Every structure is written in C-alpha cells, then in structure tokens.
Length: 383
Length: 229
Image (cartoon, rainbow over all chains, first blue to last red; front, side, top):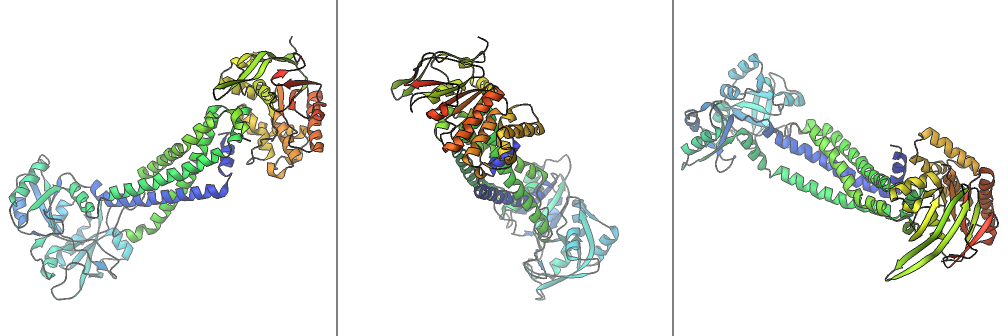
C-alpha cells in the first residue's frame, strides 16, 4: 500500500491519455453491464423452469398452431399427470410500442399446472365468473396503475376480433403474484378469446403438462410426439427449460451474440490499454532505472507497473459498471413488460471485477516485464 | 584498515562490441578512506562512469574485487545488490533524475519507501533532508517549478535522506551554470566536512575537483596517479 501514492501519481502522468484510456474502458464495461443484464433477462425464464413440466409445440415452429383436440390425447399418455394449453395473444396497451405479454389460458387447469402463480381466492372466483376478465401480473398492475374492476383496452397485434373491432376490452378480475419472480404478463380466458377471435378457432399455441415424479420425461415426450407423427400438425415436446431456451433462440442465440460483442470490445480494450501502458513505460525508462538505482527490486517495479495498469482498468471498469447499474435501474420499469428481471446480477458484477483484474494484469504484464528486466546502466545511458 | 571504506583490487571491466571485447578498465587498484572526498577526473570515455557504476553496485567487474564497507559487492546477487544500494549508497546524477509527477518532498522520500518507516516518519526525514540542502520551504514544489540548481539540491537530499555510507556523484554540476555549480559543490563539501559523508565525485571540471580533498585521474581505463590511495 505504501507504493499506492507513487502508482496513483504515475497513472496521471499524462492526464489526457489516461482519461481517454479510462473512457474507452468505461464504455466497454457499460456495454458489459447492459448486455449481461439483457442476457439475464432473456435467460431467467429458462433458469426458473420446472423439470417435470413439459411443453408441446408445433414441430414446424412455435408460431404454428396446434389443434385443441390434442389435449385429450396428451392427457391419456401414461405418465402424464395433468395437461393444459396456452396461446400467445400479444397486444399493446395505449400505443403500439407498449407491447404486453398476454396469454389466453384455461383458468383452472392453467393454475393447477402453474402453481407458482399466486392469486387471492376472491380474485380467482371473480375471474371464473367474468368471461372477459383478465388476471394482471403484479408488476404490470403497479406500472400502469390497474386495479380490480378497471377496464383495459388492448390493441390487437395478431388476433383480430370477429366483430372487426381492433381493440379487445378486458375487465381486471384480479392481480396475481408469481413465485418465479416475473409478473410482467397477463392471463386471459381462452374460452372468451376463442369465441371472439376472427380466425384460428379451436387451435392453441402450445400444450403444457405435468408428468408423474417417477415418469421418464424423455420417454413421455417421445410418446406424445409419436402420437402425432404423420399428422397435419406434428409436434415437438421438450422440458419447459428446453422450451424456454428455444423460445429465446427465436431472437437468435442471444448469449452468443452478447459474448461476441463483448469479446470484440474487450479485445479492443486489451489493445488500447496495453498500448497505453507500453507507451507509458517506454517514455520513463530512465525514471524506472533511477528507482532501481535507489534500491527498488525487480519485483517491486513489476508490482508498480502492474498496479498502474490494474488501477486504470479498475477505475474505468467500476465507473462503467456503476453507469450500467444506474441506467438499468432507471429503465427497468419501462422494460418490465417486455424484459422483466433486467438487472445486473451479483455473479455478473463479480465476473466483471475479475475481468477488470484480468485485463489489468494482462495489459500490464509485458510493460511490467520490460520495467523489471531493464539494465540500470543501459537505461540511464538513454538520458 | 578499519577506516578504509572503498577497496578495489585488480578491477577490470570488459564490454563486448559485436565480436570484439573492449577492456574499459584495466587493473584498477583504489582505496578510499571513510570521510574522504575524492574527485575522479578524466576525459570522456576514460571509464569514469563505468568505475562509478562498479562502486555503486550498478554493474559488476569482469575481474577483481570491489569491497565497500567490508562487503564484497561483486559477489552479491541482483536482489542482494538492490538491498545493499538502498542501505549504503546515495546517487546524484548529472540530470537530477527526479520523478516529475512527485513534489520535492515525495521525491526525497522515495528511498524511504524501502525502509520500515511509516508515512509520518518518512515525511519528517524528507523535510529534514530538504532543510539540510536549503530547500525546506520548497517541499511542495514539483521539479518543473524548480531551477536546475534547486532540482540538483533535491536530488542530493534524496541521496542523503537514508543516511548512506557513500555518496556517488556523476557529473552533478555538468548541467548547471558556474554559480549554481559552485553552490552544489559547496553543499557537497559541507556534507563531507560537517556530516562526515564519504563522497566520490566524477567530473571533468577542474574547478569542481578543487572542492574535493584529493583528485584521481583516469585515462583510458587506468588510474594514472598510482593506486589511488
């Protein structure tokens, strides 16, 4: 620690150059923070998935429908404990950019299978009695100020009404919580939705079913898909986790895209910061030689130069990460309906600190070795 | 013998230039008693700085022994030499070699970072050293805010702050005008006479050599006035 002052002063030897380097590191870690939060938001669904819950979708793709009639056949498969269906309604509130996640479901069966959804008994009772009722997630209710009894107009994005009205009008029957944490979605009644929609009647988006605890998920999935082989709508069944992952992959391999961007960014930082450190050491070789002359050991010089590069990266990294956290907390509410759980996790923050230390050491090690190995006599002769 | 601080016996130093080996110092024998102030003179290329580097443990002789304060420094490892230099040698360079990012006090305190002193003690020692060289009121000034003579005084303060056994000065007035040079040489003389510092001064300026108690002449790698004792 007694060398810290020397390290600190050396870092600021060329203020403009140091600030430019720090700025580039700030941008890199700002990007890191935002992209990691995005990655977490995309993948948190998969992390919270239930291993005994399976999902059957159209083999062609998730957006292709399946006949409702499949439900009874799935229920009849050995090992299937309970089954239900769901669909993607989408829709927007007030303006097209305020997209919502709405799912038409069978109230009783859906809540049996998704026991993570917590709802007050009176709200459930009300929902069952109101065909145009909607159960709203806690975070959306808070965000838009919805309360029981409110009427919510939702603009159609996929499903048009058969009466030609572009807006679906729902009444809030209740507000639910979800132990998985994400409550940025709403549940509609499938019976009402199916009756009122202009096209696609009798079809659903996917089936969700629970298997017995002792059942083999892979065997059950194979059996379900086998039943619908060579039909007009063949199926693909997987665990909920695999389903969540394939859902995310509709947008592309988010993890790969993010890793690629960050890889390019950090590679650039290695070049920028490494060049700065190399230049900084080159231009003060005689000074480093003086330190050696005074009795500073080779390892001492190594530590001082490495300390400088780690300090520069830490300064930029911590500021960048702090900015990312500030931005995330400012926009989290606005993105709650599309990307809930968009936040920087503790593990991502720790990983960032480790990356900073690694980058600092990596970019400083060559100049530090130069400083360590320099010959006093030769270096003083360069004056 | 106990008052002999520096003892060089049959010291040779060779440098390799391409395929050729050049002998820069030939069989140097030299003794410097404690409390002496020796001027080492000679033309450019005569080997003065090479000899000084050997005395300061910055380089090792090709042959012969270099004994300072009873220790054979030519046998020490690099790590051992670093620690030895920190304890026993104070260096003063022609171009001062102060760190521009540190103020006078922090420059002077640099060698003390290698000791067990705490920051308060380091600060006190640095201020004392600055007071000795007459710059007690310039401790917060950066090198760019000082004149050449003042910078060299700060460098001398840095050289004496850890109370070294031997002060090695390599052309300390080479970059100064006559007045500033005389001030610096006067200061070195005071350090020798009043503080008992043993000083070896490399110079090619006869006026600078006049401040020393005796002068040794080096010519083409050989001490021309005998053994140098």
